[in-house]
Image (cartoon, rainbow, N blue to C red; front, side, top):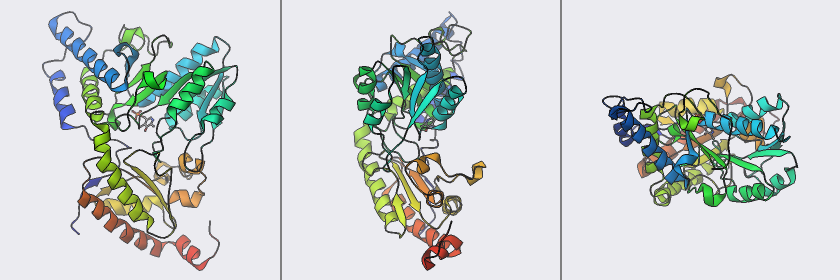
Length: 396
Ligand SMILES: *Cc1c(COP(=O)(O)O)cnc(C)c1O
């Protein structure tokens, strides 16, 4: 088969789309005004920012004044969590609930707060990668300030029962935040209907540039200001607006949320074909619930191989993918997400994540399904772990 070039790592980042780039370019060139200036050049920039805010609000079912632009998804998560912590600590509420398999932008923030007098409950997830809302209900206390649960997991793609969790929080008078960086543009979201108090999103996961994000904050909820300075973002996050990036995010979220269910039909078909194809290999398992997952996400453990070697081999075949093994990042531990669903270290190390979108063709899917078995058997031939497994010996 002829070598192809397939980008199957959209959960890591996406390409800036042509449409987004075109919309941004004028704001680098003739439209370079400061959105705070009163002459036309400034007013035009201001209008572009407010237009983008409307687009983001519309995509989420929010009001424009509930949208605050940030520099990234991580910043939105940090602001939501630390801001709520600060706000509620004044009322004597210093308990936070989150889950064990959040993104590090959430987990490292709650760990920071633990060092500063807050108590954090980490809700476990099932072997299918799902959170039981009952666990959240049981964990809420008198002094609970915040529940923060991700909408969809970035590694195994599982979609959480957000509406149920939000309802429980409201019943108990607790603020609910969700990191929806992986969900926006892939599933239908309506923050008001779903009862979400705060929601984080990121531009570069939906074909805008890196370094732009947003936090939705329900009106009536007043977080402490994040950056002190000028009056930008209603005085809450100072700093001259990154107009091109904001414009790009507006166009990107509008495009991403257009015809979500239509787009998802083919993506889901492709994903299912990939899952079924890869699972025909012996000693493989699908990580995360088969149905309650993002349409483009598949995460499969392939025993007897190292995820990193698999990625390098796939790269030689022109396929960009990801793994839950983290040797190159300097950590010997496999992903906390894969461990949270009960995988043994050695199984987690041999995992593969593909995150595909609608640019992937039928031929691409066939190509991937042709390459993976070849690469896996080559790696297994060289693997001492696989040899031991086949002989029925013990291995670590
Ligand atoms: C990518 C990602 C983030 C971080 O977003 P950045 O814009 O890269 O800071 C946070 N949460 C999840 C679930 C993500 O996938």
